[in-house]
Amino acid sequence: MLVVDSGGRVYSPKMPPLEVSDGQWSGTCNEFGAPAGGSFLLCIFQVSEQGVDQIAQWHAQSKATGKYPPFRETLPGGTELARIKLRVARN
Image 1 (cartoon, helix red, strand yellow):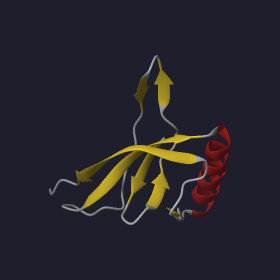
Image 2 (spheres, one colour):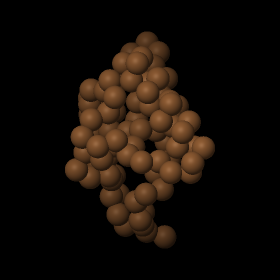
Image 3 (cartoon, one colour):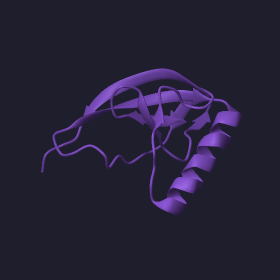
Image 4 (cartoon, helix red, strand yellow):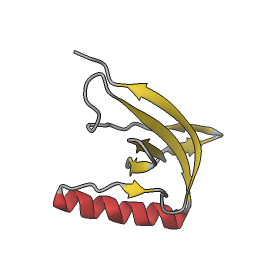
């Protein structure tokens, strides 16, 4: 699963989960929380089925309310595999 860490292990998972096939993965995500010129960490997490179910429930509730509170310190059923720092382009 792609997950944005906005700093200090503040996680915002991106739906839908990545597609994995023959050892390759693909997916897309949008991040609207970082300002132009700002940065964020894009992470890849391996997430258990139960964790994906919890995140999907969080996403559905967040979509209904329009508020997406991040997960702090841990991601349900998740183990971080990699991360990269990205900078948002200035227009």
